Image (tube, rainbow, N blue to C red; front, side, top):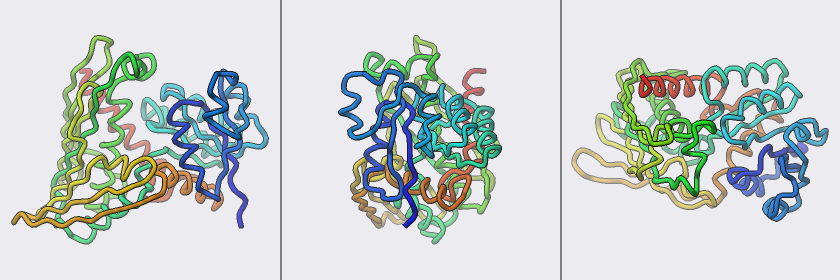
Length: 337
């Protein structure tokens, strides 16, 4: 059996805890260390039981026992530490959004290419069986020719409870935190439907509403992909939205609630619903007991041990992550114009 990849987690936030739980049932990788700026912080050892805590991010990168780094900092710090890790010869899995601009994402993959190490963006839903089933249904012609995609991701955040989301200095706002989900899914669907290897929208128009702190709180965009596929996308940190993915075709439509969470963080049931023009319906349940974050962890470990330098489809490879970042850049520019 191949030796497990030895991982270090860079940053002890909530997403790092989810990553740790997802990694627990995977024999192909092991979390051996955590890099924290305050290793004596109360509760840290309890939240990461059995994990060696290292004082500082640079110390984690320099740790000889660590082969791969999971970057779990706020996203304004992703590029800095992912590049530093890659330059040190470490493999890197970086939490989404990979960077705050396409320029940053290109630099991150460039650093990994120069060192010959793996670099990947942690979109957990891309590796889940629910996503595979959605793509299979599209390819099978279950809804005919794909013509429109509608997707939203929005919730009402409390600035006191989640101040980062409202802080411009920390990359706050709906676009940087949430837009990557509907954008990356729309690109995946458009590519699957048309056979395009790297679909980016031919046109993009957007509007946005800014809050008192200066960050975009609610925004919507209309995109047209190659093949004439129209996407209506929205995200918000100020209002709960429908949070349902609609894929509309010439002979029916698919509806999936909260595709990014699949059946829930700790596993569970989600159902793809097919609705035909005559009103008849068909359900395709996907019941997966394993932890949502475990799938990307296994995919990263397999890629690293096989010598790959990026995720295989339907994970986001370098070109995919850069394309998603470029689309979000365009969306930001539209609402700031």
